[in-house]
Length: 578
Image 1 (spheres, helix red, strand yellow):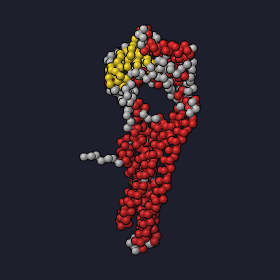
Image 2: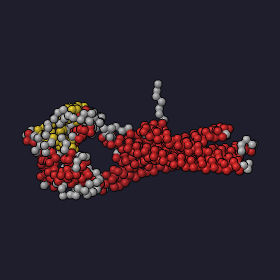
Image 3: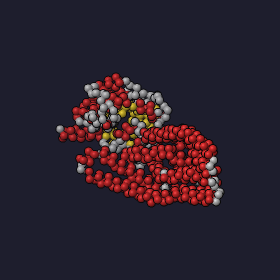
Image 4: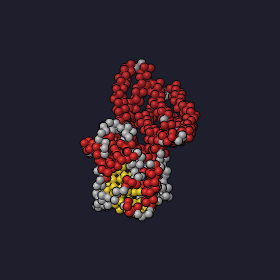
């Protein structure tokens, strides 16, 4: 039997309840207090109607008795209203916090493959725009729409108790109005989703512009980028105009449909009163209670746009919640061999149709320092990313410290590996706070000691370093990253061209710091300057995703192979630029 397709609103509701299971008891308590509040409000309406009849019949004793009852109900309602406001707002904030944390956790666990296929600007648009809109919709539902829904149910039940004939008429009218309101929201939902996509594109283009601002200025590309950004903005404006136009068309029709039930009930109720089938007080009380139900329908109808907009943008948030996560590995926490790295016929490609590595096979011994060299695109950085666990190989085995990488707990394995890449990324804060990220339980004295070891002892470790460490020089940023790796005291060090973007003087300083980091540790490095790897134990030369040759610098220089060609070409370039 074919499974029935889940409707969009059912999907949103089920996903919301799934991540907020712990809040269900609080939700039930809030609903109970809301019901009590609405019952008390209806009691006020009934008392008001009876007081009106008492005045008409000149029953002053009954009037004063009802006045006392009305005051008691009002006091009870004040207490219950406090409970409602507290519980509903607490529930709303708890759910919102959980949704934000849930989204952050999924992005932090997202696979590199997923991140490679999504622009940073689009992700930021989802988190800052779509998630905020969804969070606001949840807050609106819990603090407003839920109370309106309960008010409608309670008021309709009491209306049936007061006068079932009028209530039957109301019951026939309200579904027609409700159906129109909710159906009118569907085109708004579709247009709302298109608006979110268009705004995400604007954010992505603008993020690209900011990231490459210096390049665009250097190459005079401002006009082309401005045109691209203008096209994205135009697309967003067009989507917004279409959405607002639809809302303006539906707005007066919604107002008319909201007024229809009240006008109809007032006219029929007045007829019943004139025919002696209802008292004036009963009619007033009924209209007050029924108005609560009608206003609830009207209030919910005003929120139809937001509800459907939420449904429209929810898929963009759900894509993050369903993101392909990076492999978490197994449960292994201890290795059974001192051999740190073995690659057995490794194949890998960033795209399924294209392989970058083809049967790469090598072994690295404890304490050995190995350099990976080769032309651009030969697979050097890819090997580093596989070792760090950013990607899964498609074929072959990666054995680390005696066990297949997939059997290791990813968190434990990464504690054994220190990584220093080309991009010297630092978090906002201080030099000290960035270094301490290498080992959370390290003391400040230990962190300051490694800063001195990499030649940064003269800097104020407590001074702010700005966004991405921009208040430091390039060489200083890279040495902070090396200090962070040095503090980690890892068994395996991965160096992915850490000096590629530095000038000669900064490179020399960083090389000194790297020598202290790698001393006595198993190290795999990629160096853009081949003169810097003369003293490594072994050089592995890659070509088109395969190992072409390997050996010491002296051995490879005698082999008349790719390494010799690369080295001699680099020497010629150095002489030409000297």
